[in-house]
Image (cartoon, rainbow, N blue to C red):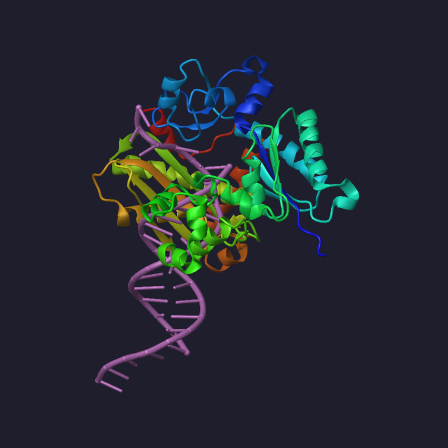
Length: 394
DNA sequence: TCTGGGGTCCTAGGACCC
DNA sequence: TCTGGGGTCCTAGGACCC
C-alpha cells in the first residue's frame, strides 16, 4: 500500500501580541492590542492577545472600537523588525524536521513530513517535538494541524487554538470537513459566504449535496471546483507551486482626505521613493505601474500602465505615477488612500538597457544606488526630496 | 466603530495578430 | 467584401488572506 502524505500546518498564536508579552513580562496575562493607538485616526488592530479577545477585540477591528470594548487594553504599535527576528528563529526550528518548509507568512508555515518517519518517528510525535522546541527555544506557542494534505492541515491547526494540536487521520478528511460550520471553509470569505447563503447553502453538508456542475454554474469554474473539493477535504492545490507574479507596493491612508493636487502628488513622490528603494533592495524590477485611489466613500479605483522599459529611477516611477493618477482621478473628490505598485517583477535591474537608452537616467540611477547603500549601512538615515520635508513641517 | 498595509490569484473584456 | 476562431497581452476590478 502506498504511504500517505503527511503535512503539518503550524501557526504562531497571537504572534505580535505574544512577542510583546515575551519582551515585556509586565504585559503577561493582560489584554495586549498591537496596531494603531487609540488616538490614531483610521487605524485598525493588527493582532491582539487572547486576553483582549475575551473583550471581543479581533484583528482588523478599528482601534477606536477596540478601545471602547477594552478600555484598559495595552495598545502598542507593531515592531515588525522584532517580529521578523522571532519568526526567523521559529522557521529555523521547522527546518530541522523537514527540507520542505513552505512559509506562508510571518507567522505560519506548512511542513511536509512525508517520508521523515524513519528519522523522526510518527508525524504526531514530530508535531509535539516541534511545539516543545519552539516553546523552549523561543518562548512562543504554536498551534499545529496534521493531515494528509495541506488544505485540511491548515483547517485543523485552527481547531484547538491556542497551543493546540489537531490531527485528521487518513480517510477522515471528508467527515472532518462536514463536521465544521461553513465559516471554517478557508478560501471562501464573507462575499462568497453571502452568495452561498443567497443560493440556499448554509452548511458544509448543503454544499456537499450540490453537484459540481451546479457549483460551477453558480460560482464559476474555479470557485466551483474549489468549493466542491474543499467540503470533501480535497486539496485544490491552492498552496502548490511557486507564485507566478510578483509585485512590490506601498500605500498610505491619510488621517484626513486629500483634494489638493500638489499635496496628492507630494504623497505620490513619497510612495515612489518607498517602492523604488524596495525594488533596489530586492534586486528586481518591472515595467507595469499601478496607482490605487481610495475615495472618501471607500470606493477604490486603480489605473495601470505597462511601459517598454523597466522603472529607471524613483523620479521615473514618480512621473509615471502622476501621469496615471491624472488619467484616473476625479479632480475635487476627497482621497483617503493612495498606493503605488510595480507589478510583474523580474530579478535583476537590466543595466545593459541604460547604456543604449540613456536619457540622463543612468546618472540618477547611480546616485540612487549610492543612496541605497548608504541607507543600508545606516538605517537611521532618511533620504527624501526637499518637497517631502516641506510637507512634514507644515 | 467606520473601515491598515502588503500581498496573490481570478475573471472578463478589449486589442491585436495569425 | 465579409468574417471565424484561437492565442496572447493588457487592464480594471474584485475576492481573499495574514
